[in-house]
Length: 484
Length: 95
Image (tube, rainbow over all chains, first blue to last red; front, side, top):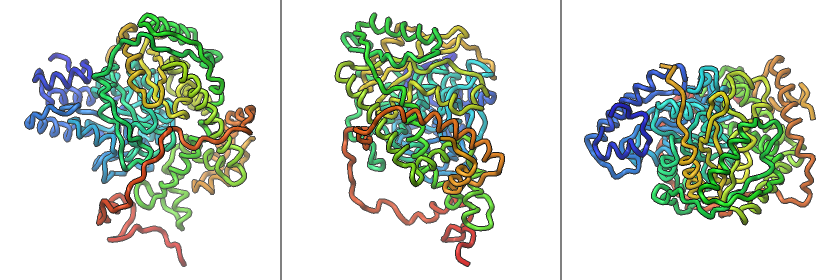
């Protein structure tokens, strides 16, 4: 095989099974690509030696029964990995070596995959451009000046640049789907509870969910299947049957009803995004789906509600970083000063902003006005979805309001950065599954994605619809390797 | 509502994050613009809405309260920035 890294995850697994190539050969190719990718800054920790050992031992054992037999996979550095440094992109965890493995990653390893490395991300997954990482910003393979999106920016960039055959990220407000859209890959946020959150550095516990990021829809179905499932260690994970998404994957979506929400036509949306959306509607019509106009009237309140709920939960979750049990510790003349200095040195600006907003909205006298209000609005947003899903099977929207923007463009204005997640946040607030599938290019040849939102636990339908779009859009990546 | 410098100082104390004057200045500006954005929610009447308590229509499973591991003190202490043989070490709390 001349170019293994161009192959999809599914083809690599099949190739290993058919003995077209060995796990070691595959692993060497991705290690080589990764070693030549320093300019992208996608990795925080490299596990190349151990990956090669795992590959060799796989080739000796020849156990091809696992869903992910013999493939190296690099993962977002938010997943705790046993004996491998896990930083969450933060200085406060720069030296943290977990003594346990997250459930989602151990699901991958138990199916035959092994760890290739830990990928860069926004600090504690707080960001939409991968510029808040303590380990520096990640670069989009589509251009030296471009962000890959965030927070799973290292994952998106690494996958698009063929540094890993597939990867996983986490999505609290769009952190899988937005970078997927910016880098021309497929990214899926599962239904809340579909995957265990155990062992993932927590950001906002009622919103966080891990999900697959892959080259195509077929791979996405496979990886979702491998990582999903009930976990007694996460009481919010749901004991619902994990479908065999791969075997049920079909582009036959005839008769499915697709909602087009009027409220997603936002002001100043670039014409090319609107055109892409129309194109997506045509693709699904061509595939036999029925298009219906729908209304989700509370959409406009989703982002403001999110920026109460997410920081509130974050401020509680991040209270654990105190310099005592693990991570960075600063000096202080007493215990309180040690805490204050540790957290001041350890957290970056965006994380501080969110902790402070969260502390403020939860503080005495403000709880009802902000947090309780936001949870009420969240209920209204969820009601909107419940109502339309009695009539339609899925919803089609753009993934993002723009293509990848320039590094540094939005760092001075937090609110302008937040607006990036306008189409993705309502889904997290409602716990629904959604996927971003690459569907076209803008005038600067930058990729654009379409988002399909599904009913709770109906990942299969959104995968099938994505496949129908993928077959018609015939999206091909169009960058040359400039970084090695 | 704008967040003035005194409020920033107050909440940074609650959040146990020390800040210098310049940071307090910047944060006062940033947090005020974020709060202004958040206050869009005041336009909507929610008097008759109950707050969301669960996003999935499934009740949480309970499990038996039983010890699954234990005797892992050395593992727990492994990442501690300062420890002696059995304890986490912190600056003196009681004079």
